[in-house]
Amino acid sequence: MVTGTPIMISPMNTLITHQVTCVIVELFILRHGKAEARATGMNDAARALTGQGREEIKRIGRWTVTMGYTFDVIATSPLKRALETAEILGQITNQEHKIQVWDLLSPGGDPDALSRQIASVGGDRSVLIIGHEPMLSMVISRVISGNAMTSIVLAKGAFARIKNVTWRDRLSGDLHSLITPKQIPAGN
Image: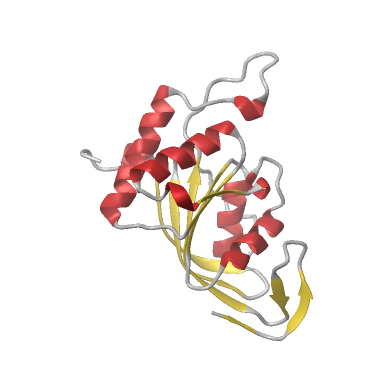
């Protein structure tokens, strides 16, 4: 649901309103899995998931299926390790067709612009974003507390669920769960 008086069109061609309320059913946040170590001369964007990283993301994916989570949008950073994370999760959840690459999820991206992009998806939808630290922790902090001062550190492969997400000048919502692959019950 989006309400309010239009005041501008954003660079993403999204209608932004003065007193907008945009309801997103849920926001899910996933940090990419464990990636290859940085090697001399290796482009950071080209680092792939390790075998352990792939297995941890598969475990998270199976757990999301067990929990009954579905995603209307799976947005990922363009970096290889994040793309691989999205592909694995998409395959396990049969939602590969929902994957979108958002440059805003790249390291060094603007958390405010990312929040606006998430809100632009809007309309009673479930959004999963896959990216990197420290951006993802900053987004969680801003959504649940209104600023980036809340200390949250996402381990590789960590998965957060934020419920009751709305946009009214900023994203806000309630942190419902935060889990790492090691915390997932056996059998997933």
